[in-house]
Amino acid sequence: MTVRTYSRTDLIDPLPSRHFIDGRWRESADGRTFETIDPSTEAVLAVVARGAAGDIDAAVRAAHRALHGDWRGLSPAERGRLLFELADLLETDAERFALLETLDVGKPVKEALGDIRGVCATLRYNAGAADKMEGATIPLGRDVVDFTMLEPIGVTGHIVPWNYPLGMVARSVAPALAAGCTVVIKPAEQSPLTALAFAELCQRAGLPDGVVNVVAGFGEDAGAALVSHPLVRGVTFTGSVETGRKIYAGAAQGLKPVVLELGGKNPMVVFEDADLERAALDALDGAFGNSGQVCSSSSRFLLHRSIREEFLDRLAAGAAKLTVGRGLDNCDLGPLVSKEQNAKVRSYLDQGRASGATVRLGGGRPKGLETGYFIEPTIFDGVDPASALAREEIFGPVAVALSFDTADEALAMTNGLGFGLVAGVYSRDISRALTFARDVEAGSVWINGWFIGGVQAPTGGIKESGVGRERGLPGIRNYLSIKNIGIRL
Image (cartoon, rainbow, N blue to C red):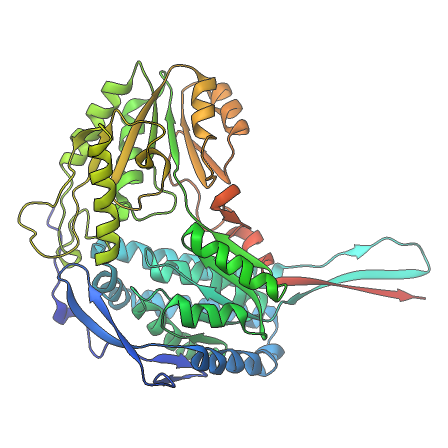
């Protein structure tokens, strides 16, 4: 089958490069800019306005006005209709958004198109749920009528990562809009383009000015200002544990609810009776999809000693066939997102070799790709469980393999880290798999599959992997407050 390749000229210029505030494009208040880089070529893709406290203040105040303006008067069903319209517009414009995503973060166009389809599904799910968030009546006796109302919490701030730029915008913004909130988005400085284009699309769909605002910039000025702004009543963040702690502490100063999805070092536990063909195929996607830049990647293989060699042989054979190249060339893997991320992952490769681990596959730059932030799919075997390679989130196309002999040993290894985002269990004995899953300390546990679930299934972490749940109906409840009303007859 022929895979289509693309050219930079397939994308219509100009690229979005200014903040979108109160329904129009704006330069930064202080005139500052920054460069966003094409990770496939290391060339400057666009020069983007760099936001700071003044730009955040303008965006938040626009969102606050919109919250108390026409948006407030819309019924939940009308909000849902606008989200359905937004999904339709995005679906029509999917290729342009996919190309923007590919140029900004490097992922293959075919993968970016899949991400855009996921965004459309997210918008439609939340659109359909907008008028189904119901209160309750409280039985307090014949002389009292008591009931609850669900109300939007207010202006919400959304600080989103670079690995799925538009997907992560939609994951939190769509439920916030369905709940009746207005939003200010701070995209990652590595990948601001689709968030900016999305804000304009929201206006085209009929959302009132100020309902969706985007300020591009860096965490230390734009992100911090968004978290601390007194008119922001809720914060959602996906990213590193270190930054998540800072946001949690900052939000606590204003007693603001937060939703945090942070790091993961997710174990795929493969027992001796597992379907190894299925497990190895899932591991290939789980470890190397999006070049390993996935919070829920299967980056840590815990393998029963009896099947370790066969599993790794299958995995290595599949990984050796993966093609690596520019996102526009539609290979299997693109580059890492930035020079900094590339250097970070390479430092783990060096640490792995120095620790005595065996490089089963990969470990370097692919041949023929002299520019760009490319790393081969890499598998380490014989890894010291106490090493950084085995315990820290790498966020690149690097997987590590460890062995176990008993289920108790596997459980201790699974729960032995500070993370608790996702875990996977592979066994034909469903009773054993369910028992193991019950005892795993993670927000999601998948049995005989990886990346199970979708927009309907709640996701989130425990321990250092985060606070709260996104997706599904719990995702909308993040943005609703309960008001109790009592009437004495």
